[in-house]
Amino acid sequence: MKFNSRSGQPQYRNEDGNNQCLKMLGAVLKSSNQLQELHISFSNSDVEQRYLWKSLRNLTTLKSLTLNIKDCDQMEISNLAYTLKRLTLLQSINLNFEAYEINNQGLISLGSALKSLSSLRSVKLDLTSCDDKGIHNFSQSLKKMTSLQTLHVKLGGTETGFESFGQTLKRLVSLKTVDLEFTSNDPFTNFGLSYLLPGLKNHTSLQSLSLNCERNHKISKLELDQLGKALRTIPSIQAINLNFRSCSEICDEGIQIMMQSIRTLSSLRSLDLKFKGCEKISEIGVQSVGQGLESLKLLQSFKLNFYGCGEVTNTGLEGLCKGFAELKDLRNLNLSCYG
Image (spheres, rainbow, N blue to C red):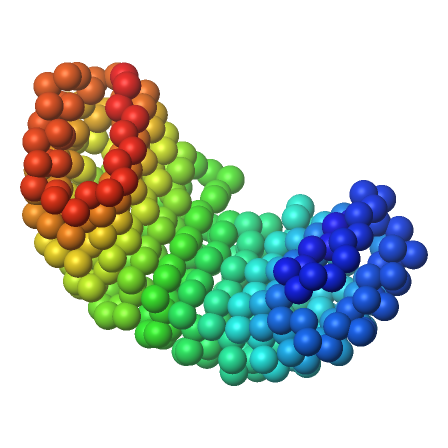
């Protein structure tokens, strides 16, 4: 077990996570009546987590909470949900239940607790082990959190769950930062992206978007076209991070189509594109990125990864570099373009 706090409290470490250590931590937390930020990680199925939940309920000044928990049974999820309802000043929460499949009732309890926290502005949650029904149930609670400004979610499941989540995004009109990562047991299913994009359209408050669709072998020019069209409806966006590593169907035409939309985003200040291992990309795709950069006059940070794209030549790199000439405000440049 590991305990961290930025408030100057002592650290407790016990990799076996015994109950005595957790009791000691509980005693410390009970006396920390001014604590505002807390980060706790522990891993052991024998730990009696009730000591922790009972202590957390007294931290009424807490504004930020991160919990990394392994081997957490269903009863403990319910206890956690009950505890969260007591933390009425909580503004940011990060929950990671490693290798644990939260069932539907657990997600309902957790969602109910989170939507009751009127001060909550940031949620980070790993749902990769949850099935479609669980994602749908949690989405029903999430859509009521209309004051949420930051959302970081890892999603598993299939198209049904992703569609529910995409519908929820439409309701979260105050979002400024969205970071979504998609995983699937079937990389040949077009998970996530097509169902997400309608939920992102016309989010006028959105400033930062990060999408991780790594190793999806069905994403092609059609999905990149849809993504570009969605981005056009968010003209005030300032940061974009797109990870299409090893998406084997992405080709030059798809990049050209997407960059035609990205080049219209005149407020963009940071652009991070990852196409590592996309073997159908050639110098034409690289050149189209350079052409798109020419219109992004406010761009300060640019990262590009074409590593492992075997058809990228020096001609493509020359075309890419021409795009930098107009970027007078560029401060950070990171290129990885070896074939």
